[in-house]
Amino acid sequence: ERIATMLGTSKPPEVSKKGGEMWKALTDADRQPYERRAKEQKDAYDKYIASDEGAAKLKAFKDATKAAKDQFKPKDTDKEDDDEEDEEEPSPRKRANSAGLSAAPPTKRGRGSGAKLCGA
Image (cartoon, rainbow, N blue to C red; front, top):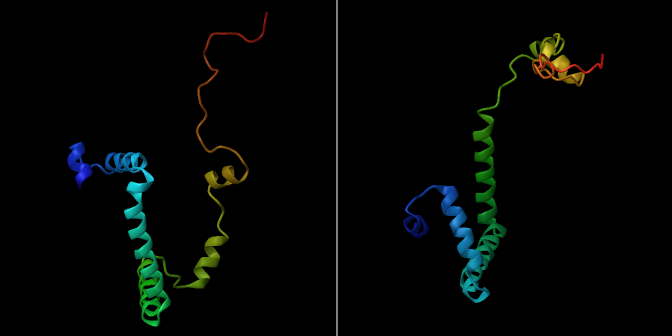
């Protein structure tokens, strides 16, 4: 927030860039309180996760995250339909890609330039 008010903008790329510049400009002595606090918080987190309560909460969080992601995955309702789809003829673009050819339309490069390559 302080950087955003200094810059007069809250655009994330600009704020991040300025924050990085300010961090690099700090001396080791100026960085020490921030690094010490980060280490203390990391140690407290690791200790909590190592406890039974923390491990259970972490497992619950991971399960909830997986369930949330799984709800957006397509569900296989009929295995026989999937087998039939695999046997279909690939599209021309897929055939071209698998053969190592470009599926892009031809360019006009080299056409109508007026220059003759053959010396006659």
